[in-house]
Amino acid sequence: MCDLLVALPDATAGGRTLFAKNSDRPPTEQQVLEWLPPRAERETRTTYLTIDGPASGATLGVLGSRPVWMWGLEHGVNEAGVAAGNATIYTTLDPRGAPPALTGMDLVRLALERAPTARDAVTIIADAIERWGQGGSGHEASDRPYWSSFLLADPTAAWVVETSGREVAVRSVERSWATSNRTTIESFDTTHRHPRQPVETLVDPRLAASRNVLAAEPVTVAALQDHLGSHVGGDGGWTVCMHVDGVEETRAALVTELDRTGPVVWAADGPPCRTPFRSVPLG
Image (cartoon, rainbow, N blue to C red):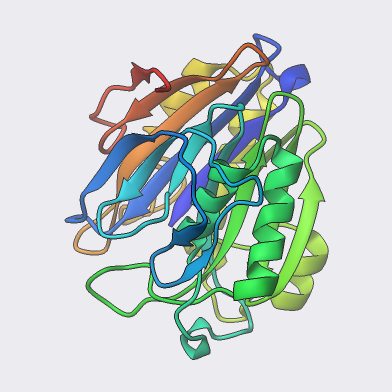
């Protein structure tokens, strides 16, 4: 589970792109926010695969939040000012039939380590899925594979990417966008959304709450931080800041302001309803 929001400069109080995400994971799982410095790399060892290194031969520096057992990132921002995050989605294609390959979190990290713009991040994700595929559990202690959607942003643009196996749909963001644990690109949703996924109760209330925040322009950093820490959008703990006993909990959150002079990042190292956001430098 996860909730993501982006607002482009015309929709924000400071005239800068704002990106926000909650990372909902198993309640006992440890997640670490870390700086991944640039490095030369001919091969990249992901969670389940070894793949080719970046075409440039070197990675970009990335500040990212990572479940400690995996290589990939739930969300982050790179030194070029690109922010990225993913969310679980289910489609008509059963992910349990796919062999271990790239996870959604692996794809987030690949995009951040290799993309100088959000549009480049779209290409990197799509090309990696076409070449190596998606697959493998997204949880350490259980076999829970799933497909992912992605929200990608930089100081001037943002993109939504939704996937089902090797199928990929892409949409540019005109002003703002919110994603959650369902397909949101209309044509892709019509074709690929799982008919028995209970989006009306477990997803749509959270998504509607996020859209309401974005509609209340101008969007501010404080409004996004408050939203990520809120208990709106559902019953039984299935809220934006999630607390479902023994199942899911918001384990980390990030809000970043993306500007040509460099990103500004605020992060919470636990549920943002009780963990204050702190300013985190890159590097």
